[in-house]
Length: 511
Image (cartoon, rainbow, N blue to C red):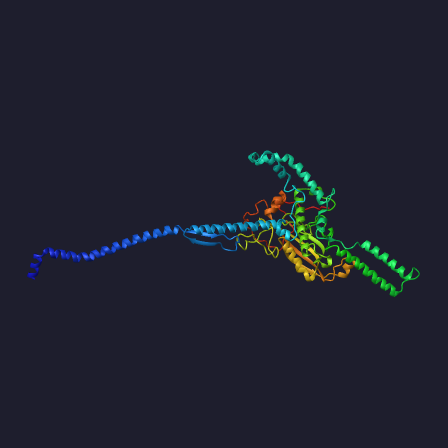
């Protein structure tokens, strides 16, 4: 022990430094571990911050879907010039294509362009140029050109209205009078409804008075040939003569049928306004009805009639028909056009008001689309505050049609414009009874078809023609592309009432 203590004393520094080395190793290890953890934390935080900066620099490229039922195409990645260029190009192409489709649909609905021309339709124009929407608009446009656009725009709305008021009434009155003359075919103007039937080569059966007169003359002539006026016909001779007279009568009916494509006269439309439906004016128009609102509805009626007649013409192969016997549609018996939904107040058979506010379905089946109501029809389309895109007109057309080719008529209806067949009832036709009345349908089997049709009218072009009262009644004061209003609760009853009575007066008779 003494030797050890002596050595320690003799080598004190060596012992002290050796002890320090031994002690410093665990201490150094402890502090090194702590420092390493601190460095790791700091570097991890720095790396995370840098990663956040990189992630924050990511962009989302997308190509929108113009079909609300389809999701847009999206890609989230770092900015890339080539990707930016490609996505912009695709978006521009899609936007242009969508705009082209919308424009094409609007033009087709209006009867403009190659699509409408292919189905034999022409542009829907007002009967009287400059009548709609009002004389104030006509005068405003005239003053705008006269004063210059800059000066005109500098005026307040009140000042513009006052400026246009003076000449507007005079212009509007003149246009209304011209519309009345046009509707009633006065002062040498053609009957537009008659011209419409001529466009489809429609006509009446052979003149029954003339045919009866011809048959009577033939009977006298043939009897004299046989008997020389000296005796009566025998039963056999009388039977043979009756047969020949019958053949002659049928031949006269066939001759008349060869000169037209379809049987139809002005009687297919009811005269004047009919409760629950529309008719053509006849004879006179009540002074109370000589106004923009009433005339606009008559104009709209006429556009619907144009499309229906165009559909019949298309079904009958346009101008290529060889007569009624070759036609799909042999005869138009009636066209019953319902009044615009929600525009006129109506009464039921007991004189009770049917005025209601049309409610919308709970929501659109596809977000962004106009809501539909399956209780209205098989398409679910309806008119209401929730629908700012289009209006609906419903019509029922009763025709005598070839039973084997009825699908050609149904196809023609859907091709002619935005029209859907919503109902079809078929019944038998007494062809012998019709033949006695001069209607010859040929050798084909025919049926009577009562066809329910729903027609769609886009506001994107219709609104500019609407009279103020009609636009207000239909809630068409907004732009056609405005978002649909939040729909109220769904209706509890079935079907659509004859009118919604939103401010428009009951429709009065026109003849």
